[in-house]
Length: 112
Length: 375
Picture 1 (cartoon, one colour):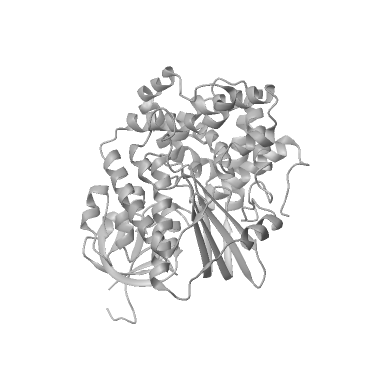
Picture 2 (cartoon, rainbow over the protein chains, first blue to last red):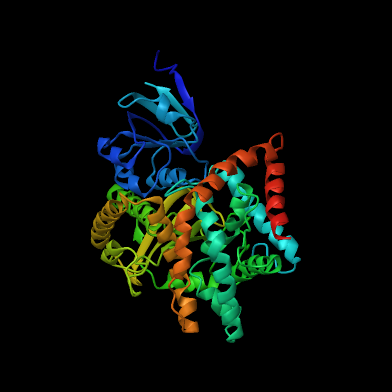
């Protein structure tokens, strides 16, 4: 796979613009927050207050639930980081530490 | 300014309110309600059991005491909290046998919704339901007066201050979700955009009621007393921007922020004070998260009941009554499975009702379903 033709892994609703590359950290429960390192991609069913510290470290947010006005979408825009929401089964289809490209403009997750 | 609804019939008013709500459900949330601390449908299932009844009778008693509706409205924090009362009817789609306004007759239920619209009319200076995606609470004169005495901080591509500001807003956003058990509208109101000339727009992000219960007899959230202010306001000026705010305060802002200004309980905060505030807020939310770590569903239901009754404290104070919920209301903690079922059934029931319809037809259909429950 070349950089000019990256493989699309998943698609969702574009929620916050920007494009970044980062390592996936799947946070299905608040106790997973400690997995996050600065610059990781936060992948979760939905964001909530228990993810606050993880969001501060995230370079992008990808969630299973929600639309353009949902909480994770608003939070990603507020933080100025790319966000894609409503990505079906994202917490099952991605794996921890995979490197992905999150395109918040198009709502696409690419394999790096 | 904006679209007013006063001249419409009550039924038309109510239908317009529910169309605005349905539009958010269909386009904004894609039919997926928030699920923290549990599904919003479940939360609203509990609300139907006590909240409309309590609000309806409290307002009635205040009016009988000679308090006018404008003053009552001013006691109601912000309009996005009031707007959320329209949602109370939502779980009836998951539990068709549910009375959306338990304890009230159908006529009283209708009056409750009409009163909700009337209260909004006294708070929003633009469209009551923000159909133009503007949440206008201040007149142009009020905006001009307010801007006159503020010394705004220039952004000047200062990446450090930009980071502090977005982290602070996000942390406060989550903090209000936490302390209001999912219903942040009871502690925040984002309003604007206000046109201030030269292609610039003002947005005001208000966070209030930040220590719920701290002034009451028992402290609902002990950690909240560590937040240094009861109210934090962020004033942001954007240039060449596109700003949208809906009736529930979901917002989209694109454009360049050029200036901002922050107050804590009315006093302006310096860059240094903002850094300290962010540290404190981050520590408090961490403590809050530890507090709720082992919360059961029934702990949350109890908290929701207490918080919603506390919301009526300003009204109850005028009536000389205690704000605390009656003990029998806490029996709701035994009905967790019923509420859960309504939440699970909601999405299952709604899909066959709207499948094959265009998005606009879905909005109309959902709005009509809600209105049919009232009339």
